[in-house]
Length: 446
Image (cartoon, rainbow, N blue to C red):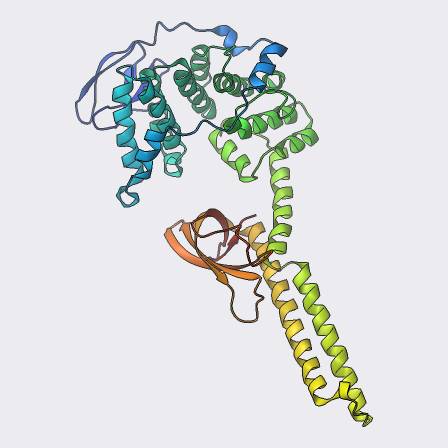
């Protein structure tokens, strides 16, 4: 069955085998097509629809100030849930273990357990954000649908509805997006709940090509309207898109500078293929930040300072050699111009040129990788002073890369600021740029 054949039903996760099934909007008893387990789902057809939520009236300044006062780091994972996650066996398939944990929390939440409902909400968020879930959008939708049914507190339900709105908008399903948005409650005093409603309404406005309404919901710039930190990237991209749709591509490109990491743009646009977000400002922004990142990569790989220092040493060595040879030819055998001076000059010349050439090549190659390489996740497994002609301030890093054909080990050299440099300690998760023609050729992404 096509999962999107009708707006009169919704997906759910079977509580027995965790397969994705479909239930009617009016609820009732359902039977899993795979394991034949039965379940009861609640009636959604009688839920009140709040049409005002879809328009979001002007914000009261006092309310905005109250929401600003709540700005804080993202809500931490509950300690009991964190302990369960830390105890998982990474070799046994983390996704399946997390899903089993999700099933147990759903069962308890359906009995009215508030703590379980909180953990269910967090688990749903963690699971749908896992890279492996990107290929299973329909399953992520079913998770949110089931978590909505089981949620105890209103904010738990609002988070699921906000995600369901965004999923529907992402595939261009306006009717379903409007229905979910209509079940949300605007004007909430809680920042997290208000953010979910605000971003959901802005996404629907973007789908309806109403850029003015999207800007009114999100504010003209970051921090003008309080937004929960976790949702800031989405707000920035929708805000930039609104400016571009209004004909101001310059401001749109400036708004995209609000993003903490350039890859956030691609992550957000991938969630909303139907919206075609920032078609002009997006590529311009990506090209600009890639060029800037290439310069930073070149600086961190080799940089001008070692190159200039090497050339200076080579110049000194060349002058010393020239003067030694000249004086020797005129039989002026002063102490400064002894055979030892000739040897020292030659060593400085050769060594300085070697350092300058090596650092220059390293910088140029790092810049090329930043511009043309494939972005991959990696974990630092070793770091040590690099051997050979390299400076003691150049470290050789060994990383475990999550490659397209499976994990593999690779190494790269990177100039450090000092011997105590701990920017990339062992165990840190980073991103690298890999040469498309040779995946072993990598460098840390800037």
